[in-house]
Amino acid sequence: MRKKISINTKKLAETLLYSIVPPLLVIFLWQLCANFNLLNSKICPTPKNVIGAFFSLLKKGIIQKDIVASFGRIIKGYIEGASLGLLTGILLGLNEKADRATKTLIGFFRPIPVMALVPFFILWLGIGEKSKVALIALGTFWSVMVNTTAGIKNVDKKLIEVAELLDKSKLIIITKVILPAAKPFIITGLRLGSSSALACVVVAEMFAASRGIGFRMSFAREMAQPDVMFVGVFVISICGALIDYIFLAIQSKQQ
Image 1 (tube, rainbow, N blue to C red):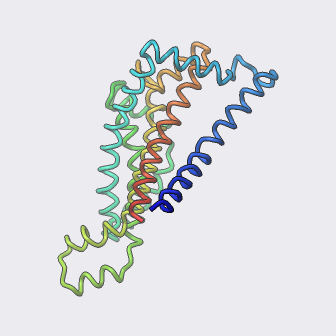
Image 2 (image 1 turned 90 degrees about the horizontal axis):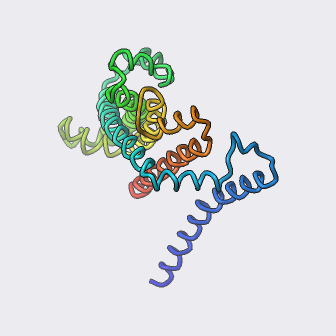
């Protein structure tokens, strides 16, 4: 028992070492360069100034409201995009004809950057919440759909053959054999979709928004406040890292 606790403690220490030390080292070097005037403070503030800007926004309650606004949009868009991506991915993965019929369309539309579609979404859906949520949903959709399709196509055919020999229904084969076998791909798609959602919310909020991390970064750029811009970048980065860690933990439990 003590040996097991010792091993777990060692693993935790190693994880913390590899997770915390590199970012701290980067911050240390960043501050060192600033101290020796190797960086232009007008466009690249010191870590001390960025931390000061963060606590200033925190004290005023601004950053909390921006985070709530951004994550409200992310949750809505992510749920819509992930749900549609899962359903579409399952359909294309199970139906070879549907996959072949849509391959050209998917290959045409998927590489288009979300930023290039912003004017169209504003034109079609207005400058309100609908256009922002739709952009996030679209960014999430592609990652989830592509990985779900790939996961289903990569399921071992022998598993399906055994289930068919046991005279299992199509629904049972899909829910009890195919989807569980494709779970690692699906979780990866959901994980990548969350990263896309974070990127898309920043882009969406830079256009016609009055609250949110993306809006705060855009407004800070106009007001020549690089320290506030860096605050926005770090908030998104930390939130993304936490979400990524959650998905990695889920993946490790599935293995």
